[in-house]
Length: 137
Image 1 (cartoon, rainbow, N blue to C red):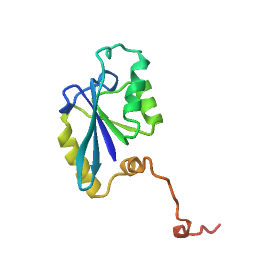
Image 2 (cartoon, helix red, strand yellow):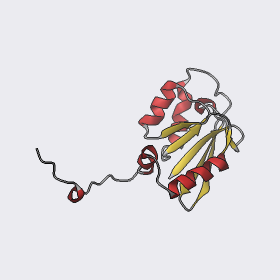
Image 3 (cartoon, helix red, strand yellow):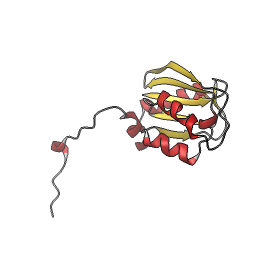
């Protein structure tokens, strides 16, 4: 599963999604994680209401299941969710490696429903009807 992190310093989740100078992407599995890419964005990021800045960011993280942010505006959050990416807001700047360690540990156990759904991103949904019990009226 690919996970993105909104960051200014490339070490911590410390950036508002729209204003982030970097989106660092990692691939995370129960066995470990690896750095995939860092997407750098220009300086003209702090202009509120400039929705044009979101397009390149959404394109960059389009194959990610989760994006960790320090903050995200309502319209940006809606666009992120529409791309089937789950935004997660951190309460204070947090080291990316700490989040990756925690996420890896959760993946080794029983992930919560929202995370199980995020893990399914990009996979074809199948349903085994033979396991369903017949409901009697």
